[in-house]
Image (tube, rainbow, N blue to C red; front, side):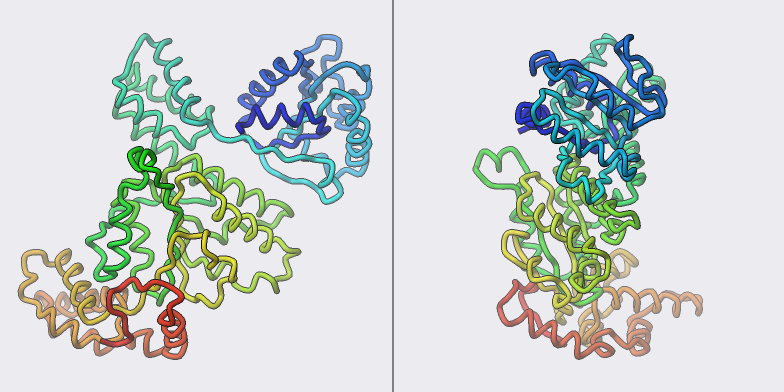
Length: 497
């Protein structure tokens, strides 16, 4: 069901107090007004702290700067009058003992009357003592049909038309923005050119990046890496290539569900993050990076609100890739944390969404320490597959050297002995190979010449790889992976090779 259906069901069921977290006041009030009309033409009263009640001349400014009086107004109306009372920013007063008590009293009273209180707030902040009387109802960002209708209305007002392909592209680019931001960025485009043009898509995308940055939860990450930039990991690449068209309409007609996601477990520096970027580039989908640590805020209830906001934004931008780097660090040992259960609630919300989501959000989570992850994260249904990314084999190291040297010295690749480099660097990860190439370039640059195979080997001899400094931990991880619990990302997998 959509928002209107859910809201009207709560009205008919006489849920007394409905809490709607949203930044889009105007849009949600319009939706509520339509529902009020459909539900027996209910009266609509809107209150805010500065102006009090608005709309009805007899009650104008009643309850101004007095939230308790705003609630007392609900009792003033006859019990038989069907009405909806919208209270803007009322979350700020819920900690007041008088306001909380009055709401609890009203919740009992309104169960027998056709009246409902709607609290509008930009965030969820529900005190524990009101948890049983408030019902939280999410208000989604505009869906594609709603965005298309707004664009067509605007084009009609301008006396302009767009090719269907261009219109579809503009509509998709607006997805994930609030209606207010959509109107604002379209007004900016019109002010620039006098009408809408295909190149305004980039203007809209920049507005989307700005919106995502302002959430301070997600980052709109540029994905320029290609699948061919990944050296080795043939099993993983084959798996990804088979699903390249899985988000298409043809796949829906075939009966394929949307791919859910991947959990990439492995040793640091072995290409897990690179894989996430390459997936987004290869599938031509936007890449959103989630820093799980940003979900946790200092205020009670804000972490859970941020988690819901993250989910809502990711689903509004779907189809997309949601990249969660080092997820093991965020949820390691959450049962023992002294945070009043905040981490546990955030984790519960997150894994429930992973299991139940139907939106085309492909989650790519990476982890270095599988033992730190809660068992629930590894249960089938959260991800399509769990891959173990081991240290590269000798053949894969050769491929990694070839990838980097093709980028650094595309015209002189044949002067480097790739076979020798791969053989002489056992236990080196992809990130460590990249670093020794940088060190070799410093050696050559300092001597006013190009770097050579010998420079690379000298740089490698001076570096102690992680496989040596953390040998015990890596061996435990490899033993865990090779006992059949996960799929191996490489066709051959071993510590040295």
